[in-house]
Amino acid sequence: MNVGDERSRSCWMEEAPVIEAPRLTQDESCDVVVIGSGITGLSVAYELSRFGRSVVVIDRGGIGNGMTARTTAHLATELDDFYSELIRVRGEDEARLYHDSQVAAVNRIEAICRDEGIHADFARLDGYLVPAEESHLSDLREEFDACRKIGVDCEWLDSFSLPGREIGPAIRFPNQGRFHPTKYLKGLAEAILARGGRIYANTVHVSDEETEDGVEITTEAGPMIRAGAAVFCTNSPTNAKVDIHPKQTPDRTYAIAGRVPKGSVPDMLLWDTLEAYHYVRIQPWSETEDLLIVGGEDHRSGEASDFDTRFEHLETWTRARYPSFQGADYRWSGQVMETIDFMPFSGRLGGARNIYIHTGDSGQGITNGVAGSLAIAPLILGEDSRFAPVLDPGRKSLTATASIQEFVREQAGSAKNMMEHVTPAEISSADELAPGEGGLMRRGLKKVAVYKSEDGAVIERSALCTHLGCVVHWNGFEKCWDCPCHGSQFAPDGQVLNGPAVKPLAEVEE
Image (cartoon, rainbow, N blue to C red):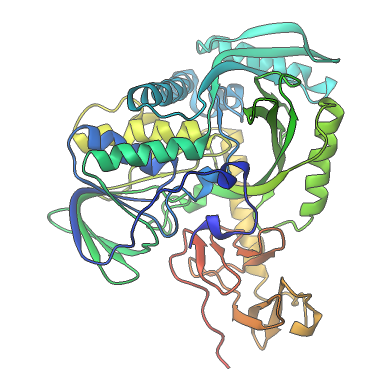
């Protein structure tokens, strides 16, 4: 199981081409094992297979059914946390190099679509950053100046409009992109298999150990994978308990998609300047219709249950700006890992020789994921890796006020959760739950995660995340248990959907 087994279905999932892959049933050996089959995992495997490395890819659920299938698939080189902020935290040189990694990622996707004949609806188009409020104009100007300092290709517009609506000033970013993410993953998987790679679905990593010869991966069903190197691309790393997790936080983000008459909405990327910002694009859908996709309304995972209100806000915002939008045909959510210095962690895990990770995609999972592959693959091949220093998981990040604030935010959230071990329960009995709902009940000194199925059966599991012991919260939209500390997610019966946890919620002792 993985997050593809949550309740909601994105527009990409509904028409996703199936990537057939068996379960691993016997021991394997290879040059590199990749854990995770999203945009980063398959991109790493693809790059290594091109250079003749034998590659094995495993995923705890279906191939390509993870968080990549829950993105809105913007291919943007502008930083959603703003380059002005990144310059404050890391300086101009590193901000410039990070921007180069994003440009390289979009270029790489375009080249792979061309070279491998992947029909993933890739297109180049303009992106626009617009102020959400008049008071944000100074922030917009500051971002434009920061972009110009580090060589970002952009243009200040004194006037910008959508059909029938004047927006005002904006920054235009030419040569951005969009594509269909699950079609692209299908193409990557086929290219990997054609080069002798092996891909296994429903194969759960439970432990890893470095040896003199490389890395040994133990799977839940028993078979082992012996490899020269291992790359963990699992949204939140399942192999690093303390190295990375204090430096990032899990946020839940929401998206809607609805059909509009073809041509009624410009084919562009658009973001606004809210902290939980709105982001907009279209996807070609039929001869007469496009799909308008809008995301936003983010919050820390496990710390809000008002999802109906958040979707209502998204639809209201969209109708006010795009009159041809009549309603959402798709509503879904995903999880993003926000790092303290706005850049992902991609490279060799601290203290390891042959173990690599990628995490911390923030709101730019596609471009960061591909940039991660461009950082990690050269390291494994023994070549120069231009982007590895700036994305290094071991980099020192507490260099500016903004970064310190992010660090404090993460620690405060975890500390708040630990207090829940002694706070009152949400319910006193399973009788208080409606069918299909969950809640936290206290039994003595322990909290219990209680779920009532649609047929009235009650499932009880320990409410403590098996990663580091935080208290999980019920997600009424996706019908799963979310850990607010580090992003683990569990099915109603306690099975792991998303790391860093690798073990299911424990059974309740009588």
